[in-house]
Image (tube, rainbow, N blue to C red; front, side):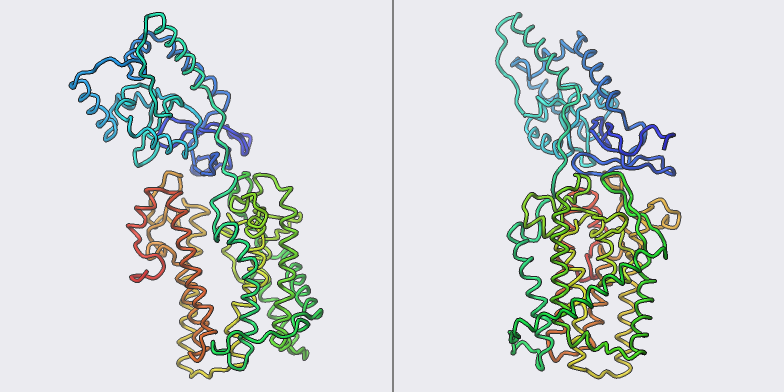
Length: 581
């Protein structure tokens, strides 16, 4: 974009909203309608900034050095600093102390014009927002002394926390030794001015976080889930095929090892995946853009899942018409599960090996801990591709959930790396546990009356409607918050430059998409009746999963949006189920 002052990928200095502090950022994009640049800070925070709030690195260095030299030559500044509590231990009367305290309180509550002038003169340094918060906490006990120094603090967030601009003062210490004579005082003053000039110049930017906090139980938890999940899926498959799948027959008898393996089953799984891959690469359907990545790029995706689903159903119908026995799927469910597990494991090993050569911008923060087992489980590379073939998008969309279209703004695509967790989930967990109720009904039919059947179908459609509409609303808002079609939606602005929806579906509960999921899970379980607990496993699992996701989302959003998230929680009280939870 030659007409823009700053190009995508440029490293510049961005002003933190509500302060005069600048930090090194990377330009990710530019919105021509709002005239805002999307930038990312070293700690991973993304904001939208105006052009006047951005400076080139060279301009910032010249400005800060010039300001430092100007301040060091100011006689008035020398006089004021000689009276600073950081430089001397002169006595102060109670009247002076009271006046200083009142001035500090007034500056905290309502910034005056004089306070605004101080903010404009504040030294601009490159500190990450996390460093600012830490400096604020360390200096809370010295607040009144710091207020007496000009050009040291600025307001950085909507909660009004003050942050020191001088790194020396961020240590929360003052030199209280009495000056011996004028020569020592002049030498100390000259030294302090030299230090101030150095500190006002741009310091090395804080390193970006290599990884987010570990979840799923950390390193040991990753090892546990890697081993437990395939064992649990095999248990469900064996248990549901028993004549009496009640818990009284737990655990199911293990068949001989050769019963788990069938080369023909492996061939069918490979054939199914290859068939879906061919449909994926066909130039049919819309070519959609993904979200803006940390690298400043937007990947393109061929979203033709509905076409693939219709064509797959037509092929299955044609196979039945030609006399192909599709009951093979049910009779060889165990062998198909084993084959899919083998493919997911081999894919996970390939993904981990290739991720070793992925650049920093190509890695997922959640799978870059440095621990082999944890990173293998979570996935290191965010969007692994073989040329234009996106491995994560394909596995998420095709082998298990073909009809899932509004996926580009979900956490899986935006933040999670592609490793064992998603590969196993896409190729094994979804196909062989989400079909548990249908598998159960083949061997344990449960006749339903027409009214009951109609009620279950209506319940399913209601859940799907809520799930679909809420996800579509979220997807449209994330892609273009200024869309006129969304102008009726109320929102809460945040310090990140983004907004939180508090009306529409997202004003009813905090996770209306989870509510739709839960209703659909209930509709899938009801046809099985209440004779056995096993077909209700999916419903129980889904409740546990949604509670886990809700807790994870709450912590992440509170960390990201701060007080704006607290306001959102007060506005939208219920998490998933209205008036219940």
